[in-house]
Length: 146
Image 1 (tube, rainbow, N blue to C red):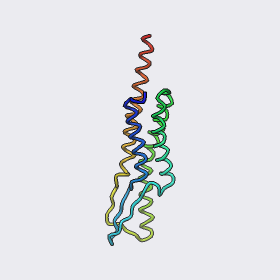
Image 2: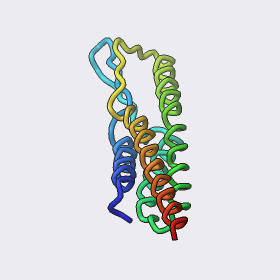
Image 3: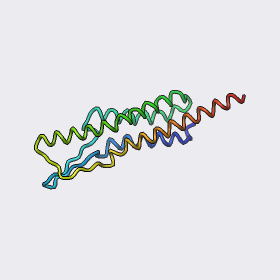
Image 4: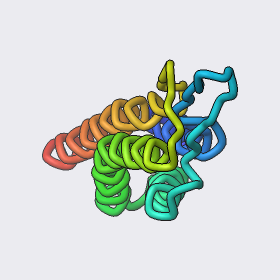
């Protein structure tokens, strides 16, 4: 059923994934006042994982008739989102160290909203997985009553 709560969680997780693609993850201010940002698409690995997790979230919405496959796709997107969180951190740290090797020093560092969205994806995908599992248990209990 497409009107279930897990549909909302999956849709929000997909939107969060694609917003991660657009929003900056990190921003640094140099001593002279110029700023540099790190975006998700600057790293091909990070970009691919974000897009795959977002697509899996949206694709899982339409698999409501096949709950087993929907649950597997949600779990895969959940695992990818968990991988994205530390990968983001390491990519930003390598970006900062590469900039420091070039002689650029940052007086201030900011983590932007794009860095929080994968954590939100993890939470939303967990809620979706829980909702799918709850539906599966409900169907099994109804089958026992027949």
